[in-house]
Picture 1: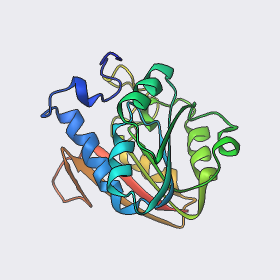
Picture 2: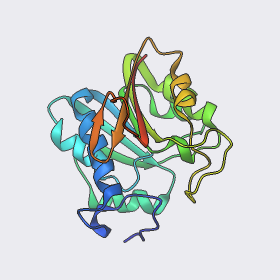
Picture 3: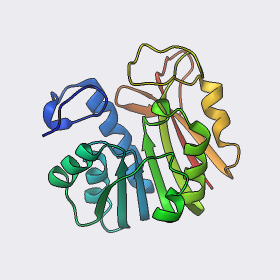
Length: 203
């Protein structure tokens, strides 16, 4: 069993009404309609989200590769969220050789990863390389004061502002932006504060 430190969502160690847990579950459910072929869950954490997609899209998905940097977390994921379609493995999202190791995907999801990564350019470059032509990326991050600015979250390098987040996807042929408030994910309404941004991009 792994410990709940606040860095990763571990549903079995959290109350069902925990807001952080519900937000994460909502993002994976948002991604289900896009799931097909080869899917990469990039920084999968405890593995519950990969399992959600595998069960819901089992007829559309060929395999899900789910990676996380922490060995104990991957061991936990294998034992707790095993599914025939999922391969859990340890990897660093900024490893330059990762595209050669993992190949290309029809869908890449990476939820609440960006704010943890110092090597942002390498992270985004790996994602772009690992997407097939016309492949989809769904990525989320909490908004904050901006790149290089302090954040109150102990595990975050920084939190991008809205403009910085949007600017990450200039290479993509299509991009849509959504915003999350609790379990609600929508294109956004004037006058509402959304703490989390979600991009859906096509290579």
